[in-house]
Length: 140
Image 1 (cartoon, rainbow, N blue to C red):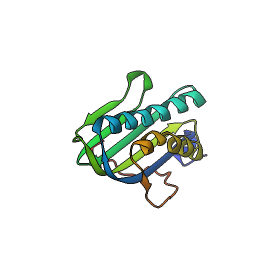
Image 2: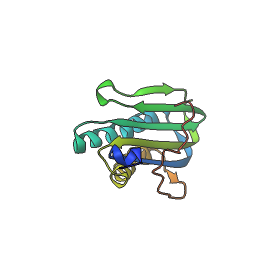
Image 3: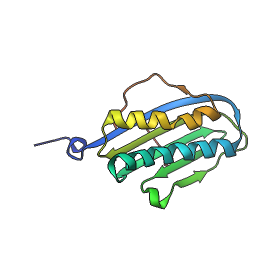
Image 4: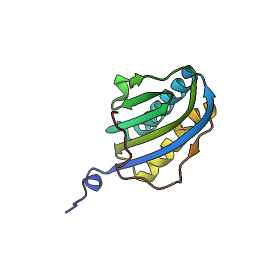
């Protein structure tokens, strides 16, 4: 008998944090962030046929951006309070999904962040395999 609900659900999870310095247009950063979330969800659907879980991205700079997707057919839930231009900030990105491993999800998500890394050079915090659901997304 499995005591771990994550194992029982065949679920993977991953979270990462990065910061950036400099200035970028709000439009460019929002488009890149949306592209990252959509790319992650689309790749999970491509691999497993459905997204049973969620993908969340939070940017804190001179304002905030919160993105959340639980169903690709319904699009992204977005709360955009960023100022333009966006200057010096932090990104928190996490997902949990059934039918993908932690490592698969990490690879999918890190690849999807290339859209943001093109807009602003991301400096990742010390790499830790953060597969527990302990990345804080207050208010997301």
